[in-house]
Image (cartoon, rainbow, N blue to C red; front, side, top):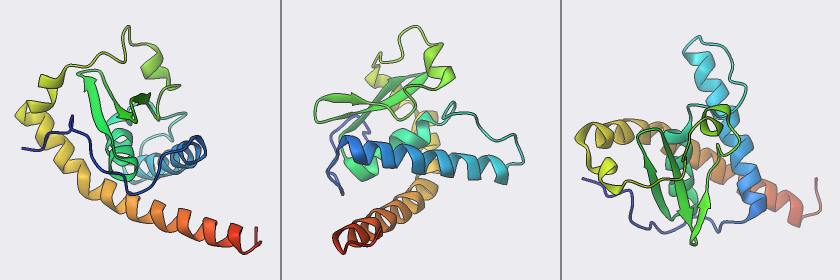
Length: 142
């Protein structure tokens, strides 16, 4: 069993700029996933918290927290939530409640583990994009 509530080491240092880049990237991937499933394109990151929190955890480390309605990250002692401004999160009375036992439920474990291969693919692509952008920026090519 994976304890998602434990701190994970970062592959990339967290910053507000990288948060913005991650949000754009995950929205793009969430939109692609909607197209694969032949559903309407998303207006925001509603419904994506499982993918978003796994993605942030794999890239920026920290831990995953949450409850049955929503999950988010704690990175460097701060709440970090890619879907903080999503309609579904706004409708939750206490979106940042943390129930650690929720993550020990076998069905929750299976659900997270089933999402992980896709998320790891996203992470690899994101890290390549970030590296490429940083190389272009450092060489003066924009």
